[in-house]
Length: 575
Image 1 (tube, one colour):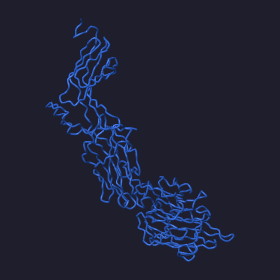
Image 2 (image 1 turned 30 degrees about the horizontal axis):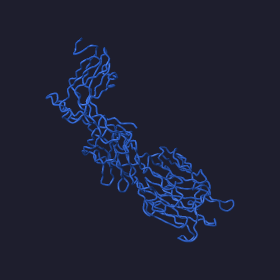
Image 3 (image 1 turned 90 degrees about the vertical axis):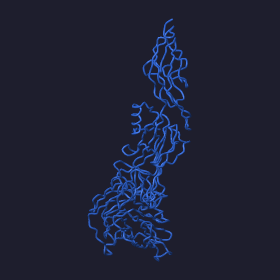
């Protein structure tokens, strides 16, 4: 597991401490250690945020990417028969989920489809933007209502697998169809969606089958022609469902058509509310023979042939939405962000040698939500990131002595920007953030940066006035312990080159040798005639209840001294 190393930030208090030390001789140990900072996010990127669930990066909110709840749709129970998320980045790459082929016929019939990015999308990373350049003309006569073979629209979708719900000749039974819509105009005659196929009649004759969703008086009207077939196959039934309320331009709305083959009930819902219903039965009411949907030959879906605006998350299901549209559409409803929220955890952060104490966690961010078709950004900056609409973030932290084992470390709640308790300390740390949407699921908090501000544990100061006296096959070392030291002992390092303490000749063992709390040490077993280099460092025990047991926090080396053992050399003279 990679371990993140900290950067440092020197505080004014530390600078003053050193000025006082040089001016008055005040020991710098009387002052707190300088603050250090580990920054995640902002210009440092989010690579350290390794674990993410329901959270994604968004690049269009701040000068650098932020973390925000992922609005990408979760698949409801049972696979959709056709699913278009429009997240792929370009119309020619739109995919229907495997059972259908999707083609982007750019410019046909004066219509153009293009990709809209996440700042416009209702869900996920993109939406389809349709621009109709041919003025739509309302249909007024029966002959016109029974259309000729329609010219291709900007997106054409055809079944390519025999098990597709709308495969040629398929008896469809239950079905549901949904999408999000952001119209720019809502002019009469705009055609949002159509299903067009042919159906054989008497020998040598055929008729056109059609499902159409069009704008009529600022409302959506759904018409089904030659789509519902009587049980004996001899008759067809046409149904029209008119929306009750006008669809407001430049506002996202959710539209759902659902059909129950057992009762013949066809319903149209807008934002989870039933706006129109009808029965595909001989009597036109509940009861009696139900007319069954049957797909014609050569059928295709056409999206946005005469429409100007955005569409997102077009889906078809082979089942009836038994509950309301809000519950059916996705886990958490038709709201933009999932009610369950999301979570992100950093990789292991290394506070350096010793057990650093975390002083506080600083967070920067805000919240986003739809404003018409685009994202509204309410930048809060520094703060706990809790908002009046109940969107919020919570932060957690855990500590350990082993960067690879966290099973025994519990997460502790952290209040951003507040001073943290003394026990918030350890060599390694992880930070977690939990994201919650607003009560209506329309806004999400976002995280711009996390800063872990900590004070590293200061190692004990090195001993002073180290001296070495050569003896026959040995060297006697002595040093002065600093006043008020909190050292638990001293390590004696030795070697045969300056600054390289890899000696292994001494009877006490290889370098370094633990001298305990003593202020002197005789090292025997050294080679006469060899010049040895010595340094001493103080240490302090660490045991913070981690998984790796006690450790040592070792300070800096003392000044180096040298000595050369010689045969017969005693008390500084030959005998």
